[in-house]
Image (cartoon, rainbow, N blue to C red; front, side, top):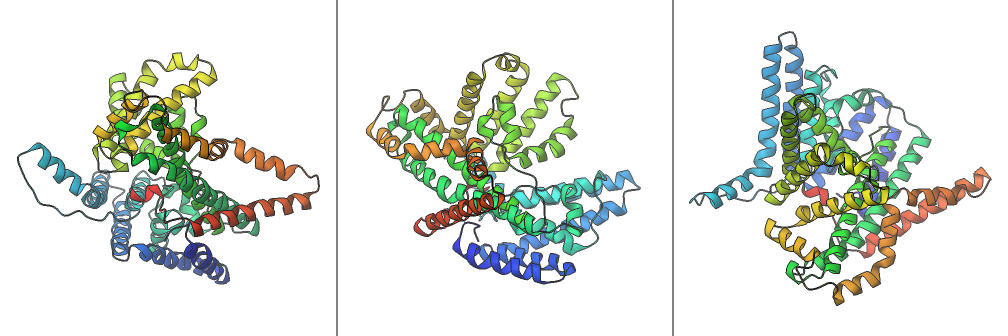
Length: 469
């Protein structure tokens, strides 16, 4: 079930909210858990069993680690067992086919294998489970005694499918006691509507432009069309994923939870390092807390730190998908971040801000080519087209798409920076009367919701891009 579906908007969400606020406080977690399992089973009726098994496995692993905490050696073995179990499940469903295919391509073998459907959200809820295991082991959080509370942490539908990845230590207390109010519901609704508009109005529309360009052979693209394509994808993935994250944060608030933001206008960054502090913040935080720092972080020699960075970014690429283009994407960013930290970072800091924005933008756009390409060969051909190795400088397709969609790109620029929200706030605060401001805000956000719904009704099926990861 998609957040941006009519079924969710006008049936599932209103019913769940109504029941949630009608039942006594002690029953709210049970209502939310049942709703979350139903939400997941709607699209993955078989794999809901896998998620339940993951819940049970990690619950008892957490209890086992707690029971052995006085014996560091036994506790460490329990952690290794728990993490290995989680990674084996994730690896089997996500990387089994990729591994066999790679072996067959390298060795003179023909090992048969069957493509497995990737359980939706498995990368996200597995990382949440590992965060729980590590937080209990490091004593950042207590092992949860109530399996229903733990099940809700893993399966909570607002952030189950595509994050943000919520660390157990950040939400432990909220599972037991959280504040709910009309103002919090209202704030959550605004977050949700903004996210819905990002997805339905901007991501889907600019994504259609990208799809049209992506269907063309990379070698036949002009410089204009190639750059228009990668700009379109950059806007599509930002509005698609940040839109989902906004909706998740908003839904969390409607049910009394406070999730941390997952995006902070990454395209305004003046360095690649800054970009990754603003993009998919929960994933970057997860890798920093549970991989980078345990490896030694930056409290080590330069060579060791470079190794740590390359390990983290190779794993980040692999987390996104079982394909060599994702590995290349991760390695690409690892190399860039190492160079920015140890070679040219100080020089970049001295450049004028506009130049730093352009520098960061070009590196990020090149990275997206690796990310969206079906193969490394296609990525190379696309990159060549961006510098003139395709069909010249300008072609009719690129000129037509730019001429007919210039307003869309203007809205995308506004929406991907703080300018869009500043403009909305300025309009709302223009009247001095607070009641007029309230009415004006209601008109704007209800109008935004209605326009988004109209786009959904008249558009085609467009699942969130990060569902595939």
